[in-house]
Length: 574
Ligand code: GLY
Image (cartoon, rainbow, N blue to C red; front, side, top):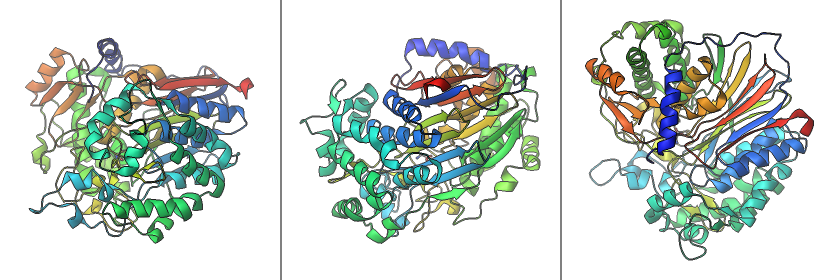
C-alpha cells in the first residue's frame, strides 16, 4: 500500500468532515427532470482509456461500445489491475428499454483445480500456488464480455471499438509510477516465466517511468478477437497458446473447458436507500448483498443526529455483520444456494440492528470466526453515461498486482490469480484477509466469490454511477461513495473521500491517515473498537453523475491515482 501524499491527505481530511455529517438530504428536483443527459461522461483509471471511450462515442458508438474501448485499453495500459487474462462485472442500463443487465464475466475454475492443489505438505494453504503461476489462474472471462457487449448491446462492430487498444498495444504507452512500483513488488514471480519476461524485459530491464511499454503480441491477440469474436480467443491460435503455456508451466487447462467459457447474465440486486434506488452487483459478487445489508441496517438510525464517533461506530457494526454473512453464505449461485432475498430484506436488517449496542463494539469473535490479515489496491473500475442515458458501471480485474505473473507465451495475455478468491482451505484467510467455507469452495466450472461492486444509484433528481478496486475493501469504498452522494457531494468529492473499513475479521477499523480525527479515534476506542487510524491510502474510485434537475453531467476520478481521468462530452460533439 502506498503512503498518502501529504496534499491528498489534507484534502481528504477536509472532505471527510463533509461526509460525516450526512446531513444534506438528497437534492429535490427544482424542475421536471430531463429525459436525457446533456452529453456523455466517462471516468476511468487511465486517461488513454477515457479518451478512447470518448472517441468511440464521437464515432457514433453508444455507452456499450465505449465500454468495449475503455475496458480493452485498460487491459493494455493497466496490466497491474486487469486484462484479457482476467474477468469482470458489467452492470448495464439500456435507456430505450429501461432494462438493467448484469454481465458476470468472472473467471471459472478449471476442472483440475481441486483444493488439494493449493496446500503445502503440512496441509496449509500455500500462497505460492494460490497467488502465483499456472494454478492460481481461472479461465478468463473478460474477452467474452467484450464480445457480448459489442454483439448484444453496441452499435459499432467489435473491431472498431477494439481499434484503440490494438493501436496502443502495438505503439506502446508511457510507463507510470504505479506500474513500475507494482512490477518491483511482483518481480521475482513474474520473471519465472518466459512469456512474462518477453513482455516486461523486452528492453533488457524492468519497465521504468517514462519508458514506452509496447505489447505487439497482445496487439495480435486483440486483432484475432476483433476478427473472429469469441473464437478468436477461446478457440484456435490464442486458445492453443494459452493452454500450452499453462500446461508447460505445470498447470492443467484443457482446450474444451476454455471453449466452454460463457458469460452469465444475472439479475442485479436492487434495493432502496432513502431517496435512492440502488442497482448493484449480485452473486457471484458479494458486493451488492453486503451493500444492501449495511445500508438497510443503518437506515434504521438518524445518522445526522449523531456525533462522528457514533456514526462511525454504527457504520462499522453494520459492516462487521455484513462481512460475517459474506464469509458464510456467499458464493457462485450456479453452485450454491445464496439466501439473497433474506440477506437483503428489511426484516433481516432489523434483526441485525437489534444486536448492535449504541455505544459498545461487538467483538467479532462473538459473531464467530477466525482472524485475518492484509489488503492492497489492484483491479480497476470505469463508469460511463452516454447522451441517450445508457449507462455502464464496470469493474474488471486480474486479482492481485499483475495477477498470476504468468504471461502465456506468444499471446501477451497476463493470466489472473483469481483462484485465491475461492475458499481453497475452509476458514483460512486469502490475500485480502477474507475467508469462506463451503459456499465458496472451488468446483470445476464454478466462479470464485468477488467483492467487485459496480453500482448505479438513482434518485428523482440524480443518477450516479460508481465503483472501485480494492479487494474486500471495494464494498466499503462504494458504500462511502453512496453516502457521499446522499450527503450532496460532487462526483469529484465522492472519488476523493477518505476511507474507513471493517470486514469482521480482523476485528479492526482500518482508516486512511486523516480520515478520523484524534477525538473520534479515542471515542471509538472507548466503545471497545480497535482502530488503525494511520493506514496508507487505498482504492481508486471512478464515478460519473448526471444531475437530472440541473441538466448537468460531471465525473470524478480518484486523486490517489494521478493517471486517471474523468471527462464529459457535449451532446453536440457527437
Ligand atoms: N479479485 C478481487 C475480487 O474480485 O473481489
